[in-house]
Length: 406
Image (tube, rainbow, N blue to C red; front, top):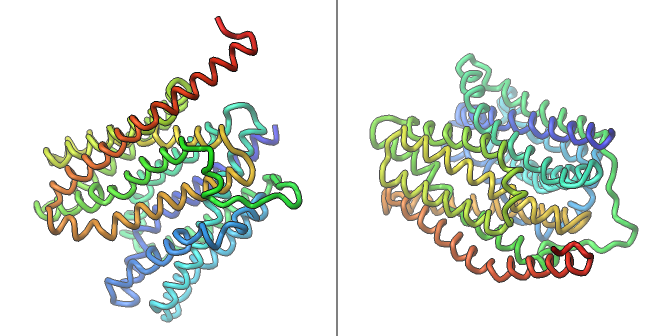
C-alpha cells in the first residue's frame, strides 16, 4: 500500500534527522568554543534559530501551506543542510564568526518553522489515506522516535566527541537532514483547491476550545521545563556530582517516554483527550515537586520515568484533538501553532529559569514549577468539564437519531 510506504519513509526520515540533532547538540558548543574562544557564542545558533519559529505566526502563514508535498519538504531540508554545513566548513577554514553563527541559526529556524509542522501534517494526511485512526498512530510514533533520539543521541555524541569526531558530527547532521528530505520525496502532494483561504493560527482555533486548553497545559509544562533541566544540573554541581542528577532524570524521562509511547494509543482511545492531557501534566508537576523535596539520583530517575510516561500520553491526547477536528490547511496551521507554543514556552522558561534558580534555589524552583504546572492543569480540567459534557450530549443525540441508542 502506497500510504503505508510513504508513512514509513516520513517516520524514518524524522527519526534519522532527530537522532543526528541530539548527537550534534554535544559537539556544536565545543566546536564554537574552540574556534571563537567565547562561551557566550556557544548559544548563538540555538538562540537565533528560535527567533523565526516564534515569529512564524506572522511571516510563515502562506509559506507553511507551500510545504504540502514530499519534494517541497526536501527543498526545505536542503536549505537546512546548507545552514548546518556552513558551521563545520567555516571552522575548517578558520572563518567561524558570531555573525555567521547567527545567520546559520536564523536559516535553521526558518527551516524548522516550515519543516516541523509540514512533516507532521504530511504524516497525518498520509495516515488518513492509510486508514481510520492512523493519523494519531503515526504522530504518536513520530514523537516516540524523537524521544528515543533524546535518550540515546547524547550518549552517542559524547562517545564520538571522546574519539575526536567533533567536527564530523556536524557533517553527520547535515547529511541526515538531506537524507530525511530525500526519503520524503515519494510522498504525494495534499494540495488545497485553487483559491482556498490560508487560515491563520488564531482563525484555526475558532470553534476548537479543546485544542486551546491542550496548548495551555502543554505550554505551561514547556515554560516550567527549566526547573527540571537547569535545576538538576545546578543540584549536581552544588553537591560535587556534576551531571549525575541531570543524567538520572533525563535517562528516567527517556525510558518513561518510550514506555508511554507504547501504551499511549490504547489509552487515548479510552479517555477523553482534554481531561487526559490535563491529568498528564498535573501528574508531571507532582513528579517535579517530589524531586525537589527528595533529591536522590535513584528517586529522581523514578520520578523522571513517571513524568516521561504521562507527558507522552498528554501529547498524544492533543494530537487526537488536532487530527480529529481538522484537515488540510487548518491542520497545518494548528500544527504550526503547536510548534510555536512549545518553542515559545521553552525559550521563555529558559530565559527566566537562571535568575529564578539563583534567587530561590534549585530545589525550591523544582517544587514551585511542579506546583504551578499542576495548578494550571487542574484549572483546565475543571474548565473543560462543560465542554466534555456538551460533547457527550452531542454524541448521544447523534446516536439516538441514527438508531444506535440502547
